[in-house]
Length: 439
Image 1: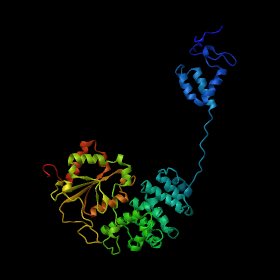
Image 2 (image 1 turned 180 degrees about the vertical axis):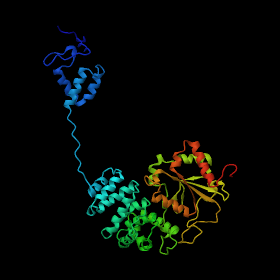
Image 3 (image 1 turned 45 degrees about the vertical axis):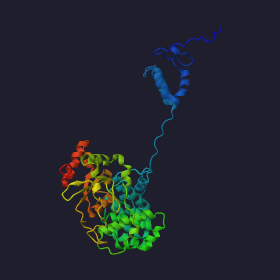
Image 4 (image 1 turned 120 degrees about the vertical axis):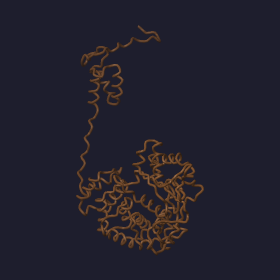
C-alpha cells in the first residue's frame, strides 16, 4: 500500500542494551551489528574509528560487546606501527660530528661530548668538527675546560693548516666564555696567525682581536696593523664597514683604558662610532624574562622619575641599565640638573694612557645599576660572559660606580614592596640618601 506524502515511514526498532549478533548470514536482533553489517561499519572505522566509537559510546556501554567488537576491528584494520630504525653506533670523531650536526643543535650532555672527543683518533678531528664544537660551546654558554683546552691544543697543532676564517670560529668561545686556556702556545700561535693572515681576511682579523680583547690579551703588532691608515681605508669600502668600525672603536677604547704601554697608531676620532648604543640583542630577545621593568618601577616609587635614567648610552657608546647622579655627600640628585656623562677619555690621564681610577674635577658621583640576568653568565657557573665582563670593566675604568644586581637576589624578592626594600638597602650601602633628608 502506498504511503501518503509527508507521512513518516515506520521507525527502526531501538536497539536494546546487551543485544547480540545472531551470527553470519542471520539477521541482527534488536538492531545490533552482525557479522555482515560489522563489515560495513568496519569500513569507516579505519578512517574515523575514534569518532565513531565515541558516538557509539554515548548510547552503548564502553565495555559492551558492540563497542569491544568495533575496537577489535579497528585495531585489525590499522597497519602496525613499524619499529624505529636502528641507529648505527657512532664513536669518536663520527659520533662527535653526528651529535653536533643535529639540525636543532641540541645541548648534548657534556660527558657525551667529552667521551666522543676522547675516543676520536687525531685524523678524525677535522677543522669542521672542531668548529662545530666551538660553535656549540659558544651558543649554549658551556664553559667546559676540557673541551676548550682540546680546541686550543688543536689550534696550536694545526696552526699552519688553518686560515684566519677558521681560526676566528675556533677562538670565538674563549672570548665569549671568558676563558683563557692553559695551553702555553695559544697566544704565540694566534699572534703568528694574525701576522700571516691579517691582510688576507680583514673581518676575520678583527673578529679574532675582539675575542682577545675580552680576554685582555691584545697583541700590539696586530693593533698596529688594524689601526694603520691603509687598513682603515681598505675596510671603509667593504660591505661590512660599519660593523668593523664598531669593533675598531671598541678596540680603541680598550687601548685607551687598559694598555698604558701602547704607543702605536689609534683609530681617528672621525672614524669612531658608538660601541653598543642600545641594549644587546640577547636582552631585547628575552625582555619578557628580564627584571628591568620591575626594577624601574621600584626606583620610580623609591626615588622618583627625575632621579634616574634608564637605558642611557654613555661615551664612548656603552648602554647602561640605570644611572643615578649623587653629590659628594651622597644625596641623589635630579639627573636633569647634572651632566650624567663622565668625560671620555678620562681627564686623569693623557691621551693614549689608561685610567686606573678616573678622577675628575666634577664632585658628583655617577652610579650605574647593573642588572646581572641569568643569561649574562656561563651556563652552570658564576662567570660573567666575556662581553658583560668587558662592559663592566670599562665602565669602572671610566669612573662610574657600579652597583651589581644579581639575578638570584632579584628572583628572591616577592613582589614590589620587597623589591623596594632590597633596592633601598643596596643604595644605602653605597652611602646614598634621598627624600627630605637627602635633598
